[in-house]
Length: 109
Image 1 (cartoon, rainbow, N blue to C red):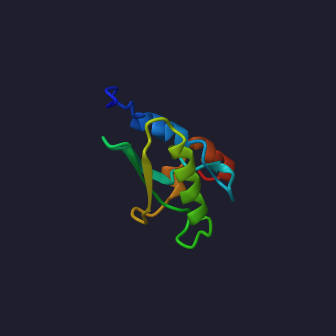
Image 2: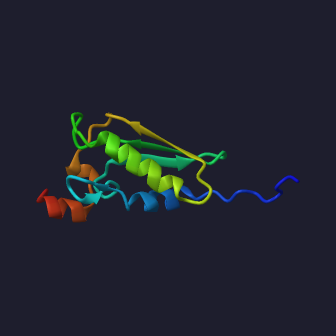
């Protein structure tokens, strides 16, 4: 018996909001608010692609963050798989990419 119900995928906005729960383990701040997530989109097969960067190319928590993102997003209904890509362009700049709250917490103005 074939399933005739269409799978309801989360919206890109819902994915972005879910990613707010993922915190940089060193800074204890949301990776979204830090400006580390450049793109998070779901395709029509339920595969989420996340393009993100790290606070520095040598950041030791990169693999941990990738795993945290994968685990968090695969818990969402309709997400079939997650691909997390580390990108280095543009380079992360908290002065222009971080939220005002993060800038204030980090003393950046």
